[in-house]
Amino acid sequence: MDVTGKLLLFCGPSGSGKTTIAHHLLKKFHQLAFSVSATTRPKRESETDGVDYHFISPEEFRRKIEANEFVEWEEVYKDRYYGTLKSEIEKIWKDDKVAVFDVDVEGGLKIKSIFGERLLSVFVMPPSVDELHLRLKARNSETPESYQARIAKSEHELTYAFRFDKVIINSELDEALKNAEKIIAEFLGIK
Ligand code: 5GP
Image 1 (cartoon, rainbow, N blue to C red):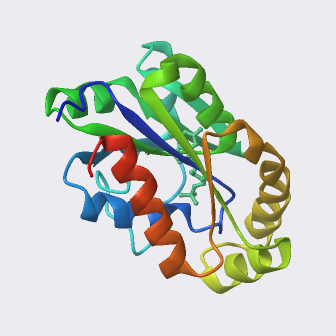
Image 2: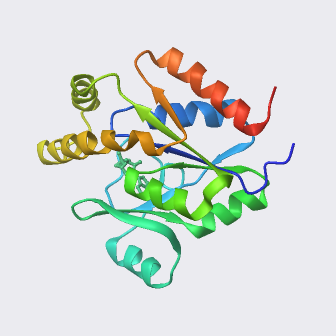
C-alpha cells in the first residue's frame, strides 16, 4: 500500500483528548509517524524533549522563523510559540510514513490549506463545554492564568469543527478510539 505524501491532522480544544487519540493511533498503525513540533513553552514532567516536542528557547524559535524552517507557527498562548517544522515532514516522508499533526485550530487550517487532498483532517470534540472544563482542571498541568487562557481558546476552537473532514466526539474514550481506528484504516486503505 502506498501512503507516500499523506498526512493526518488532529485538531480540537485543549482537553478534548486529541493527543490521547493521536498517540493511540500511532501505536496501532505502524504507517503513522508523529510530527514533533517545536515549542517555547516549558516541558512538563511527563514529557520528553525530541519526542513530545522539541523544547527550544524563544531566540532559537525566532531564528527558525527567519530561516523559514516552519510550515506554520503560532503564538498559541501569550509568549508561548509552537510550530510545525518542515524537516519533520521531510524525515517522515523519507521513511515512507504518514505524518501526524497535533496542532491548534489556526495552525491546522493553515496545514490543511497547504496540503489539500493529501491530508485527512480530524476534529476531536469534547461531549460538552462543562466536561472540557473538568478535564482541563483534572489535568492539573496549568497555572490559574494559563488554565483561563486555555478555557477561552477552547471554547472559541469548538466553533471550527465544521471545517474538518471528520469529527470524533470523545465522550467515552474507548468508543472514540474505535471510531478513530475505523476512520484511519479507511484513510490508509486497510480493509
Ligand atoms: P500543549 O501546550 O497542551 O502541548 O499544546 C497547546 C496547543 O498547541 C494544543 O492545541 C496543541 O495541539 C498546539 N500545538 C502543538 N504543536 C503545535 C504546532 O506545531 N503548531 C500549532 N499551530 N499548534 C501546535
